Length: 572
Image 1: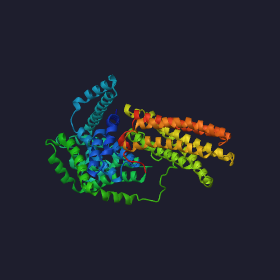
Image 2: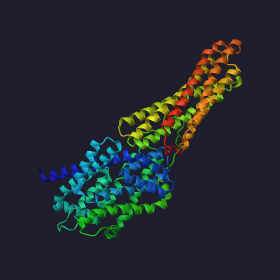
Image 3: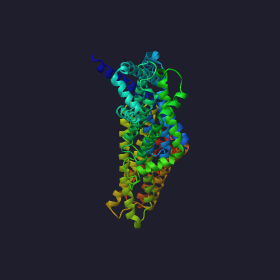
Image 4: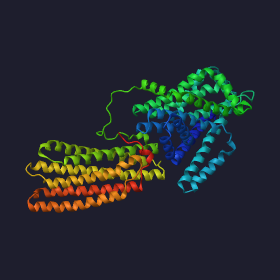
């Protein structure tokens, strides 16, 4: 095989193994620790410093700044955090992502195949899901370094070719070319970790003297700055189709790295001297990989320290770039507000937005029950407005069914990806049970309204008696009380009092029995028309089914509680 083609194949193959290992390791770590990292992001965003710490920790654990960035964009789209909070997390993510370069700088080539074998054995032989994730993570870790080793082995001949040395000389002498090279590489590969790994391998190749690096730290730093710019494309792509704050977060990520490049590009020689001073001493070829990792870490730490007190300026800049406009405010007449297919590859974020959509749906249903309670206060002077109220209940009950269908479709797609952990799958099943009961209550509300309107359309001379209306209103108030007691506590992560719910349900059941008896008595005494019996009994039947759904809902939430951190903010 032609040596040049062999080198190209080796580079591409090694890069493919590295990216596959990196993505696999990130995915396994997200499955194992994604929920915990989500909690950290939601809890540690009270001020910019905590936001930076949360972003750095999450990225260091998940080994993916893209995952953290996309998660932050998802949370801000769902209303979990504000723009300044999301920006602080992005700053932290830039620090956390430097851990990858630090790990790569360790020389563990003698243990690569041990990692691969042990990781494979654990994932293959162990049945415990958590241990499987640990084994897959270790296996992916080995693949990551196997890719690095493959790239390093094929790069060695390049160090002595005139074409390669001339090209590197141009890049080293012209920092702007280095920045453009790094940016282009990351835009193509879509992984700054991969391009920095390639850079560390290139830099570790000896020059003609066998001691100094073929590119040197001064030549590597501009390429590193370009890598940081190129990685922002992931955040920009993730923000497409999102709300304005999500787009602003992505723009802030780009501004952070671009401003850092514009600042550091003027001081590359001095910065290189500083990095050499704080890094291990020795032959340049032996230590340059660590120096590049340190340069990457210091760059992001310095830029974060600069921008933390200036977040308000960053917010003003991104607001200027993406200004507010007079847009339609999302209202209840929209089918879904929070669900988006972009979250499907982020299970933690997907479950969060699903929960928010379910709570929004429950608020619509609560509003329907409240309308029924008000509409039951019947009088001939208000008959027209009453009809309008019942028509609105029917319309919004249909909306609830559409929202429920969208949620079910979204969750089905999430299940089909096969990326949920056991805990996440259990939580997802609980959410499906919850939305099912909420939909039923909304459906029964619509059926009650339809029955009342049907009765009124048949004859204006036949109406429910005052006592019948009072009984219906009392039952509707009971159902409204039950539903509120179940759903309202979710805003602070607590559960409704079970004894209270059982007491209310027993009273509804007893009331429904008494109402039937009282209606028969009224019919016998001529106070109610026998023509209304069928409609009236259907309304009572729907009320009974609503009470059963409320109790089912309470039981589901008790056995499958929705996590408190997802519900700390009420929907407006």
